[in-house]
Length: 236
Image (cartoon, rainbow, N blue to C red; front, side, top):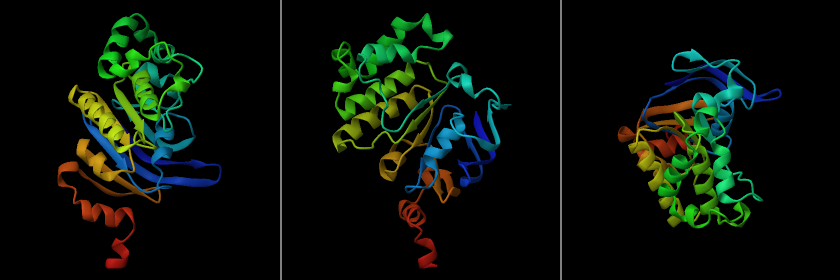
């Protein structure tokens, strides 16, 4: 569904990603794991056109070059690291902003009903300022806002960041439900255990390159952690 070919990206004169060729299957949850500085968030920013890149990005076999300004309209939606909700707007106003693509505007009520069904806490706080939410509630709001755009593929960046374990479990239960409903998901996550618990496919990034690509069911967690922390060279 979504694929990259020889993707290079970075910031200024600094290259972060080096010739990444990856594919993300329709209806599957693909986890991108790796240490800080591995290039995980840079990959999402390149996919969404937030930073310049070389190589190719294709959606449904068609090159995305020149179309990144309308990714939400094409069905690619990102839930950013750190939530980034509009703090002075209400929960429901934040959600309504997610329905900006023209194809979503006429279906606003059913979109809200779907999100409130997944996140009952947001329904309780629908008139509350987003800035008054807890970290877990703000993460739910960011995910709900993304779902309002009726994504074909949902990019989620570090959803567990700064959350208590019990809230992490709640958020990932919802991510698992979205996958079961057929949403294609690209998940960036540092917590390898929780990422593998919901993933179909796993790619490990380190130093801007792919160090491992396997179905989640075949991943050896000890080997993954050796690669994650660059211990394989020491033990060789």
